[in-house]
Image (cartoon, rainbow, N blue to C red; front, side):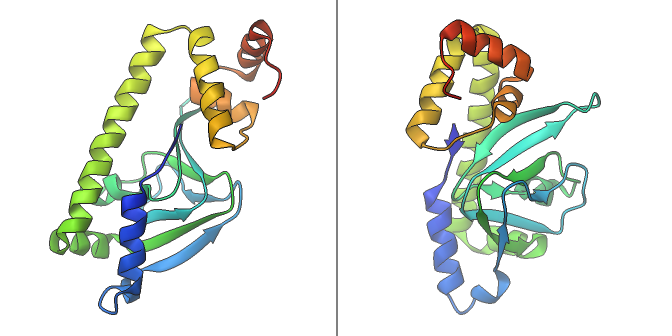
Length: 191
């Protein structure tokens, strides 16, 4: 449920320790509920999560939020917008205290073109993210919520992070009321 990419996080640690690249990377700290990226905002930077957990969500025209993913260590944020030169497609908000590496979009392009290890890891991460989103969409089409909810709760328990009912409902694309009904039917009131 919480995606991570320790390979990219470790590469960023190496780059911050390298005299030729360290000046291009800064650290930024976020508190829970603080937003790093806001949907439709013009971005000047790309971020890689050093520590913490964020949620990536889209706000629809009806003002409802839909959580695409929960992102942890090593996940990259704003790379699609930097590559496509577009505004932010979603909002990124910290769930736990979070620290991110910040690099300018220009520097991101430079790293991508000149550091094969960086471009390789970023391409793999983008491909993996696309596959995960496709799998999530397929699960939502093929299985009922009562079938997927126990799997989701099990994944939450194994990752030892508590999410609000609102976050879980937005991740499933349902209302909190519907989530409560599903939890009651399943006999689970631990969330």
